[in-house]
Structure formats: C-alpha cells, structure tokens
Length: 229
Image (cartoon, rainbow, N blue to C red):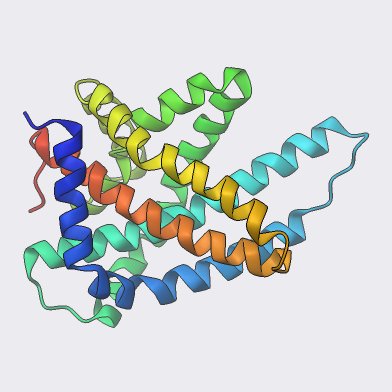
C-alpha cells in the first residue's frame, strides 16, 4: 500500500506531464463556469443584516452555486481522464457532447452532496468536513461506473471507510498550503487589483488546484481497487 506522499508525487507527475493537454481542454470550461458562477453569486448577494433566515439562505445559495460549478469542472476533467486512459481518441467537442446527457444528474448529485456538507458545516464544521471526505469518490463512481447520483453517494460513503485516513492526509497536503497561498494572495491582490479581477483569478487558480486534487483522489480511489475501465 503506497503512502500518501508517494501518491501525491505520482499524481503530480501525471498532472505535470499532461498539463498542456489538461489546460487546453479545461481552461475554457473553467473560465466560462467561473464567470457564470460569479454572475449568479452577484445576483444572489442581497444580504439583509436583520434577517438571519435570508442570511442562511444566501450562504446556502452561494455554497450550492460554487459546489455545482466546481463539480462541473471536476466531472468534465474526470471525463477527460477516462478518455485519456481509455485512449479513445475523442476530440474535446466529442467529449463534451458525450457528457451533456448526464449533466442534469450531475447537478442532482452535487446538490444532494453539497446540502449534506453544508448542513454538517452549520452543525460544528467537523461533520461537514467528514461528510465531504466520505463523498469524495461519488463523482468518480458517477463518471466511471455510470451510476445514478444516490447510488454514487451511498457507494462512496461505504467505500471510503477504509481509505478515509489516506484521503485526509493527502487532501491536507494539497489544501493547507493553498489556503496559506490564498490568504497571501488576497492581502497582496487587494492593494492593486479590482476585486472582480482578483476574485476571477483566484477562482481560476482554485479550480486548477481542485483538478490536481482530483488526480490525487483518483490515485487513492484506484489504490483501493477501483481502476478506470
């Protein structure tokens, strides 16, 4: 059984060696989803300081929008990986068209998962993080095994029990340094960039890091006996 550091090293090797192919396919998608997501969030920004229910609904709406657009990026990236490993030779346009019929199911999957995670975060934060870990294979089952949203979530919750510690360590190695980078970036960027431009750049960078994290999660997923194909 490989250690999490070795898995991250192997994941980085794949991501680095295929970076230009990944960027060529994913960057236009990330830009479009970032712009649309930010527009929807801006339309949602109607906070009423005296109305707690409105504040909670706004927070939930923000979380749901971000989660669904990140999930769209991730699902398309996983679809890219599936076609890469299958060596199907499909063009970017063909990959997108083969994915489109499952788009409504993807939004159902992500909305169910995001609602559970948001509820866990509201409780005491830790339950939300725990639920996120246990659902981390769901989008892979959905993409690679072609199963429905509820079955993907149930299967992920069941199958991640054994790999939970490995997932926690690997995610921490990727996410914690990026959190420090985000804090540093926000401090620096706020002094010379317009907030919309700063947020857009951060959204793009976050999406790219999130894609790398999916490679790491896939490496753990495959380590526990779930190869593509």
